[in-house]
Image (cartoon, rainbow, N blue to C red):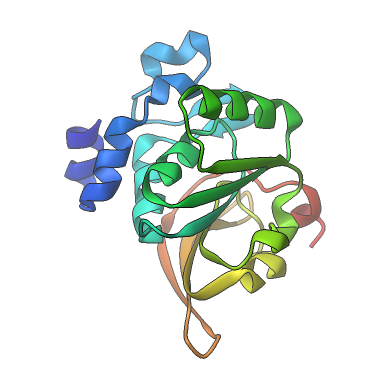
Length: 204
């Protein structure tokens, strides 16, 4: 996976590659899918959700440019795999999952692997986690039609936000950076296909 799916496709951050090598992806997929855990495609995890392919996880993580002391907000815990990769690189990870079944399952998997620097919560990620803000990095693992304003407000100066944005017909993976004057710089990384963000994001 590291050599063929990540390095060969342009992932160069050695900390990200090392984190991806350490996290046992098979611990976050359904038992029937264990043999496919490291395949170069997303896998269903139940509840109409998926675990992203390794390359996309690595790309999003690299774009966050995480530092050891960073505090990270993740919207969409899902299987917990991306959460574990973030926990390898940051000081603290706060992760929200709207589907109770997935939230419970991912929490068990993360605890079993000893990730004590992760705090999870069941709930709608639209409003973020205001009492733990500001965050050095925010990542969304589901696509809103447009980025929720509360999440942008919770991004620290110098902070990075990476998210798929768009509808069923077209989504772009974007990276935003909070500048010193409070403005947001934005760049588009590549077209993607993620499950839509649910909850209040569908109403905005």
